[in-house]
Image 1 (spheres, rainbow, N blue to C red):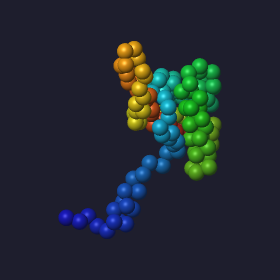
Image 2 (image 1 turned 180 degrees about the vertical axis):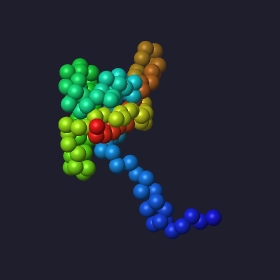
Image 3 (image 1 turned 30 degrees about the vertical axis):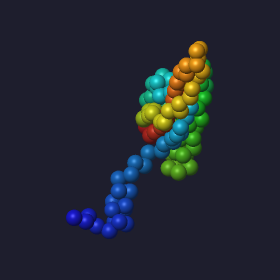
Image 4 (image 1 turned 120 degrees about the vertical axis):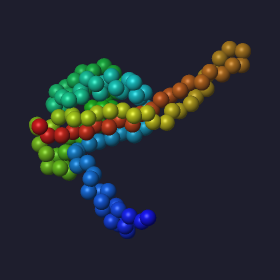
Length: 128
């Protein structure tokens, strides 16, 4: 029934942990669909090209993702000892976060619901 001591189970679980450098922003005030437009543009590119794309992209999500990408690059350099010149974006995705529900008053005492969607955005890098 028991699989071992709690510390042993944690040790086994941590052995298979992903060591690729990554960064994540939680509860970003961007709908997932709008974030994915920007993420699709940089997926698979090297980091210098991706930063250039994000810098000149007019969408609001690009500023948040650019900051996130720079954080992932810093994580790769400081924690993993990787060179920024050899890095590329291996994975980048956005998942749905909790939705804030707001009410907009309308005519004749009615109320319309406004859904302010949020997302969790993750960027994973790797070396070529």
